[in-house]
Length: 223
Length: 90
Image 1 (cartoon, one colour):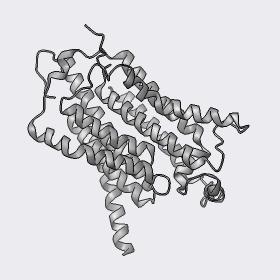
Image 2 (image 1 turned 90 degrees about the vertical axis):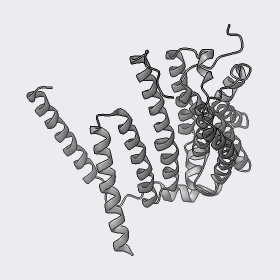
Image 3 (image 1 turned 120 degrees about the vertical axis):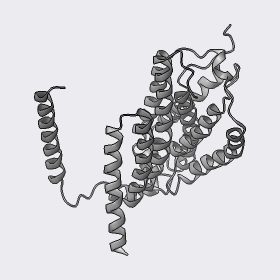
């Protein structure tokens, strides 16, 4: 890079910094936000933790689209990456890593379940629980273990789309009762949110593990 | 008590800025990724100080943990693609 272009870059960065600084300074000092609105509507959300209420109920559409984006990211990786070949699964880890995997996996699954359950009334929820599940899966991949041919076929695909599919199904099913899209009936809201979050946890975990693997797993029919 | 919290916040902010700078200028990509993971963990601490434990959990689990793991596998793949004759570490 020559001197003129680096001076130009510096000037552009400086002006960007000035614009950003001005934007921050021109924000109203004490914004009310939507916290009061959320607090007033908490009784109709089905959960007692405001963050979960916003993510899964009040702004459920955003979360639904986030699930879809995660799935699309994996489709992108799979269409660019080569298919795994049998030699790739031959690596084996040392005894320490394998023992650690055996010890930690049950704990991680328990923690994921706890985070999913506690999300209704305290910090936690599907994304956190899913990423803990994914961490257990990454440990499994690091140990050289791979899904067998039978599981890597349609059971894997079902696991990947389960979260998004469950979300869409619930969102559409409530319309049968005359409500709007994603407008859960108040008496069922708690159960429906837990159902969506459980499916989403599983799908997020599997999607993140598949992203870490980076290649399409071998299906049973391959020669 | 408040003074100590203020000092803690100040050290946290300075460490975050320093880590971010080192992440950007590190010539070794592996070093850069490790610094990025450390940055993510400290950023989770910053979210806790901002009373946002939900974001802190997500940052620690996804931002630091899984993104770091994804970056490390990408680095391993890049290395094995550019130097196919060299047997790379897993």
